[in-house]
Length: 570
Image 1 (spheres, rainbow, N blue to C red):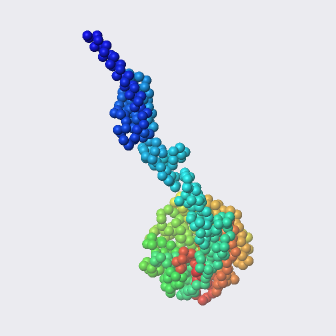
Image 2: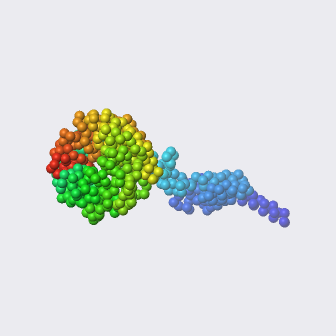
Image 3: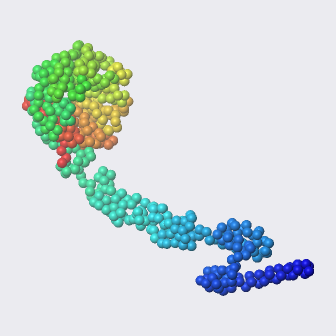
């Protein structure tokens, strides 16, 4: 009985397996309605293709799990092994479906790692610039619908820019407008700039009075005539009373009141002068500087007494304080200069005396007084040189004042170099040839704009100017002589036209104010002349507050007046 029972059971099991295989073959591939799940038998489902597929079976079900997570279908091959190769194959199918149905560009689903999937601005499957990434103008990738992206001639909206479309791109300086070069010009869509070496219609010759203040343009106009109290001999310009406007200080040689302060109004005009009783009777020359460190400029002068007098300014009044004159041992003083000779931050006074054959320094005490006796600067020189004019500069750029003196009877100019030790010591005095014969006046400044101080001499024997260009180390190139055709008088250097190079202002005996303007390469531009009522001594300051130099000349014609020339280009 038991043997028949177990035999029957085995037979029934074999029949069940055979029946399942037959059902499986029938179910799979049968047509169905995807919208009606009842059109497939139990254990099967209708897919989107309208075909019944088995959903519950060993190996197959776990393979379907692989559809969601591809890796599990791979492991299910072992479980399907017990039921035959067919289960193993279906497990593999599940694995393939699991891998394929992830983030796929083109399935209209924005998955992980995709910026987009479909649409006008989305890169499609297989795009070499990155499939399913957004097309953005400005990413330096030229996409469909873009003419350019990131090129110099590309507009911000990725359309191609052309000169004349009124859009300034990276390759253009401008696009449209009066000063922009038009399409077709060899330099199209660049800005016209007067002075760039390219002749454009907008670059017209600079003319005084055209309403434009052009770089390098020199426009001076006859200004006011300013009266002086007595006969003037020398003049200096500076903001004496520290009110922001430039004033004039005049030296009077034959008067007890040695100095006169004429205050500026800031518009090129001046008020009436105020005389100051000096500590010396009469002054042939004057220099100004803040000798007592109160912010106001004081006056220093010398004259027939062969002494140095200091007149203090206080509260805008010149002569509010007087110091005793100094100058022990001086003989025939001719010119003075105020400068920082040593390193104590107090202004000192240098004096050249015709018969002393030396440059002498009165060191300042910082309170308006000067130390006496003076100290020899450098070495004495040949008495036949007759040094009579003096100017100061820093010829070797060491921060200490150096000096140059013109020799009226010698063969050039005396150079006094500061040792730079801080003690105010001078190196041995040297002679520099300036021309043929003697030198009248001498002036310092930067003629070529290289940052090194130069000096100019008035060569009285051959009627020329001597231009000495400094090298910044205390040496100079050979003098360049500029013929004048008439004897040179007093000289001053100043940048009148704001081009970075000091101009040469010289008064000549034929009653001319002559202005020589250096240009690039140390060449000189055509000379400018202004007529004077009489020859005299010039000084320079910004009298009308326009940022450019103006000129005042005291005249030696007995009329007691100053002629003023103000910059005027408007």
